[in-house]
Amino acid sequence: MLTRWKHHNPDGSLKYDFDGITPIEIPNDPTKPVLRDLGLTVVHPFYGEKDRFDRIMEAWKKYSDEIKRAVTLSLVDDCGSPAVMDWLPRSTLKRLDLNIQVHKITENLKWNTPGALNLGVHTAPTDWVLMMDSDCIMPDIMLKRLLFEFSPDQRHAYFFMRHRITDDPVKALNIRPLTCSILIHKERFAEVGGFDEDFTGSRSGGYGCFDAEFHDRIKNWRQCVVDIIIDEYIGIGVQDLEGVKYDHYSTNRRLFRAKQLGKVPRNPERLRFAWKKEFSGERW
Image 1 (tube, rainbow, N blue to C red):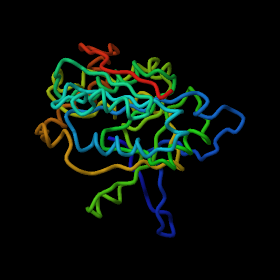
Image 2: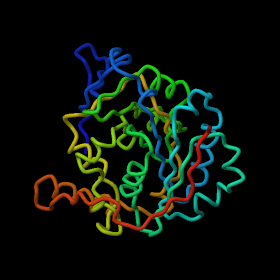
Image 3: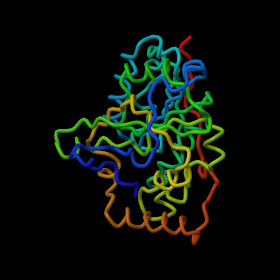
Image 4: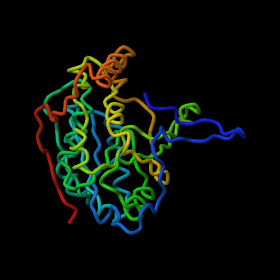
C-alpha cells in the first residue's frame, strides 16, 4: 500500500504529501527540451471495455491538431472480447487522422494488465511513454501543457493528480496520484525491469499490486507533476466484469510482500505471452 496521502497542518488545513512522491511544478527546467520535442506515446490497455474505448476515442478526435501531430496513441488489446479491432475497422482508422497503433495479446491470460502495459512500452515508437488505465483521459489543456511546458528528465518516473468523474462524493475526494498513470523513458523502464508479470492472475491466482510493487522499486525517482490533472471515470471495469474478489487482492498483496522481503525473487522477464501488431498508421 502507498503512504498516506494527506494530513492536517496545525491550523487544521489539509496538506498533501502526494503519496510520498516529490512534487514538482511546470515549468520545471526551461533549459531543457520540452516533451513535444522529444516525442510521446500514450498507451491504453483494454479488455473488452467498449464504453471506455469509445470515451477515449471521442477525446482524441477532439484534440487540437498540434497534439495530434505530436503524440502517438497506442492501444493494447489484452485478448478481450470483443477485440479492439472489432471497434476499429480499417475504414474508420483511415478517417481518424491520428498517429495510432494497435497491438493484441493473443493469449487470454487472466488479469494481465502488467503484461499489457509492458507490451505498450515495448512497442512505443518514441522514447517517452505515458501509460494510463482505460478509465483515464488527460484533457486537451492538460496534455498541451505537458507537451509544450514540461521538460522530462530520463532519471525520473512522473505521476499526476486525478480528478474523479463520479456521483459518489466520497470517491470524488480521492485526488492522490494515479498509480498506473506514469510518464517514463523506455530506457529507464527497462533498467528497473518494467512491471513484474508474476502478478498476472493466471500465474499468481490474484489481482493487482503490480503497480505498487513497481512504485516500490522506483520510489527514489518518482515525481508528481502537480500542475497536470488526469480525469478518471469511475464505473464498471475489469474487476466487475471478471469477478475480482477481496481474496484475489489479498493473494497479490502477499506476493508483493514476499517480493519486498526477498522471499520470492523479482521476475524481470517481460512479454511472457504471444502477441501481434494489428495496425500502425501515421497522421501525415
